Image 1 (cartoon, rainbow, N blue to C red):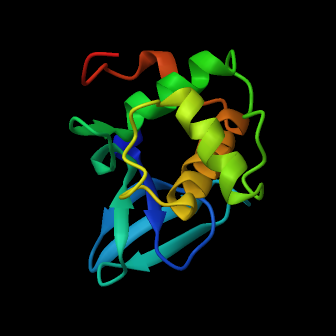
Image 2: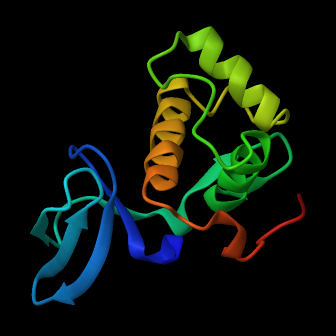
Length: 136
C-alpha cells in the first residue's frame, strides 16, 4: 500500500486506509481498530502523499520525512514518545530533519507525524518501497 491510499481525517484519531470511493464520500478502514466506515466528502480529508513539511529551503514530502525517521530508527517505532514535551519533540525532529522550519512546523505537527509514523510501523508499512520524491 502507498501513502496515496492512506488518509488523515480531521477530528478523527489515527489514520485510515482508503478502501473505495463511493457516491458522496469514501469507504475507509481505521488503522487503529480495523473498523470500516463511510466518510462524507464534506469532511476534511488529507492524503498523506499530499502532505509536506516546511524546511528552510523548500517543502519536503511527508514520505521523505517518514523515510528519514525509518532510517534513524532502523525500521522500529520512534525513540521519542509523541506525548513528550515540546522541547523533546523538537530536539528529536531536529535530529531527523535538521533544516525544518521551526517557525512554521509546530510541536503539534511533529506529534502528529510521530504518531502517524508509529502507526504505520505497527501496520507493517513498507517505507522503502515508496518512491523517493526529492534528494535525501
